[in-house]
Length: 392
Image 1 (tube, helix red, strand yellow):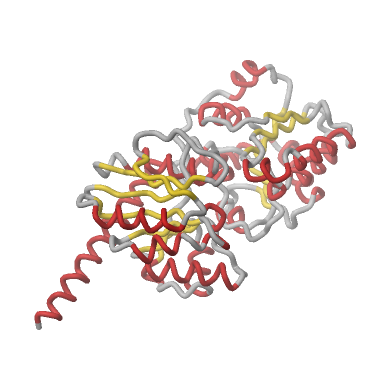
Image 2: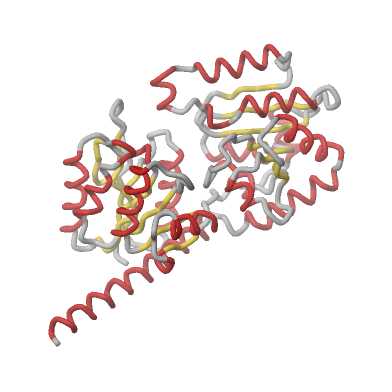
């Protein structure tokens, strides 16, 4: 493969999939001479992109999607396109404009599915069926997503590849040294991080904290991350303000710290390696993937989570503690159990770290490269077969 094009949101746009695509690109470049990007702009902002961004797609402009496909078709060195699929990042109802790009594309493409809904609307279902049908390969991040793709979205099993969510190569650091540096020497730290919005379940985490803090007064719950830009535009800081109010109502001011910033990897690594328990309190049990949870596993943290789909898969076999239901009571019980059992905490960290070693972006990009090569080989074989058939 000489070159590939990633179609996605991209930094400096603040978006989980943008960060995902940058990490993929930075590691795929070790295997492919040229990895280019077509960046999807949101309607309210323009960005100064790095040099690998060769095209910009205005989210709500259908002509841009067709222009991107036309450019890719005529680029002689470009062998493969990788489309990051999430309903909310493309234009039109449920992001249907990406179909314009896919249908006009003559180069093979991989479809990376970030959200595979078990009960999609008819529109959502048709969009993913159409894209998957056109794709040379469909990537997902869990076995459950693979099963949904074949059963709900009618994707041929041989087209589906399970590739885990990548984790940055965080530099391991000493927990006591980090706590000393940040002034938290006497604290036991629980963290939740990522772009903030109602889907994060912070109120569940805070209410769980209220149930254990009397017995464990040294606890500090760090909530790190900026409010999601789309939410910020539509309703400002209403959600964060409601969570802050909850902290005040429960008299937890000394036990909760908000860091309202979009964190770079080095800062994120500091927070994670300082963490005693990583809390993933998502209320949506159908959540198919969580980059933040993958990062916590990658850093070998003791994790407590609500029982959403991704957590149930990645934290299986004792790699984390999964609550029986998404409630403060269920989370509090598990937090208390870990705090009272240092041996359990060590065991959870060890098992998470073991899986974490296979989730590095270097390993994941290697899988992407191998899949792309396999798909290209199959594509060439099919063309050869078709041409032989025509000649015959």
